[in-house]
Image (cartoon, rainbow over the protein chains, first blue to last red):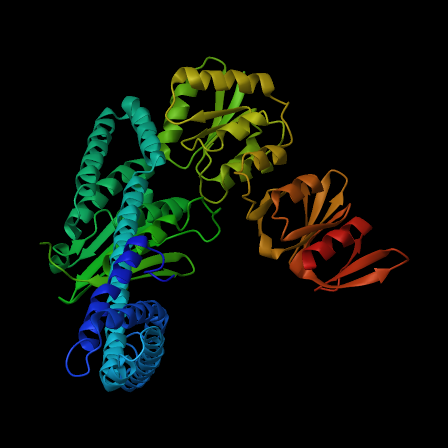
Length: 354
Length: 243
């Protein structure tokens, strides 16, 4: 919709622009040789400038169709020259008609002759008014585009933050807590020391998760520390079924990550992978960097014949969303499903924590 | 005296069940299983009165195990997942114990199991009701003597009702499962499997052609050449799905 027609305040301001325009017109007509009487000049200039401001309003659609930065210069020049010429001709013709009308009410004042003498001036003024209107509309379109861009980037920021919050909320699966508590309940009588160890590990895990969740960025090492605690707890639960390998370059440990990005991948590796196998398997986390890019992978075996467990794909989708929100196309997530191995590989910019 | 089997893939969880159950005076623990498959096998050999069963286990999940067990065995789910609990109760599951639990809670489940031994609703019905609504089964499990077949739905061509059984046709073989065709139909995605006849449930993409048969009836010719009768209602259902 037309931004001037839809907003009363804008419409009033736009219509008010006809006043100085008309005054300038009076100035043009009522000065110099063969000058028109000021009253007659006003009777021609006011309707003329009113008509100009109104008739030039639809220019907005033309300007929108020919965006200043995307249209070729020659096309812009051609279109708007034609527009200026047309406006100039229309102005001089309409002005002439008005002059005749005014002259017919006051015989013999030389109004028509005075107007004829200034028709070149009227044409130039018409062309200038056209160009003024065009620049006004381009400015308006520019303002709108800027506002839309601002709104868009704000929406993106909100989306990113929401994805972040969703991810953090999804972090601690209640089942993990319930199963761990059940293990503690079991160990209390059979192996009190291990029960105590599990309590401490659970507390550590929650403390670290909460602390990380409050930060905007963490290092890979911070993430790995959470993963190690988590895996120690799952290790008490799953026993020898779970083993863990960490092949991480020291340079990669200091690289920046969104907080708790890896955690859903580690949880998935256990829930949909290692715990589906009666004999378990090795969860392997690798990370390396060449200074420009960081590559992280989480790999685990799974039982292709296992019953599918609910929630498959949620964690991975979340990781993708968060990386997209934070890095756009500078980050990539690839999931590779082999016959009985699953591997998620992340490639992202290697950046230091500020 | 009640004879029980413990099935859970986590050693501490099994130890806890064993500890609490063995403290009860009239409970005999027959054995333990660490996967769903093992649970079905051990239950077949030892014939317990009740099974304490986890839901998320390797090989077969708790629902699949439930379907394959002798219906006289009382099943108590013991799990950390509470999302299925309500529906399991609606169909009179013997019990549904949430981890972690107190000894009293387990004792309660035990007395329910005792009261219900030999008296349990259709296991397929129970398993179906315990699944979240709108979520259909991904595979069909069949017990064939000591052997357990897991049939992914892509490999199930059609099912035919035979008295109290359904004959499942898969990869040129026929497997018998103790279940009604209606119960099987209800557990499968209706956009994949169509009841073309009172006694036949066919996977839609296995149908090669429909041919007229007699005055009002049709037969469906499957990809492998099998001819399956199609009733008038079945024909209407097919047309609705194919249009």
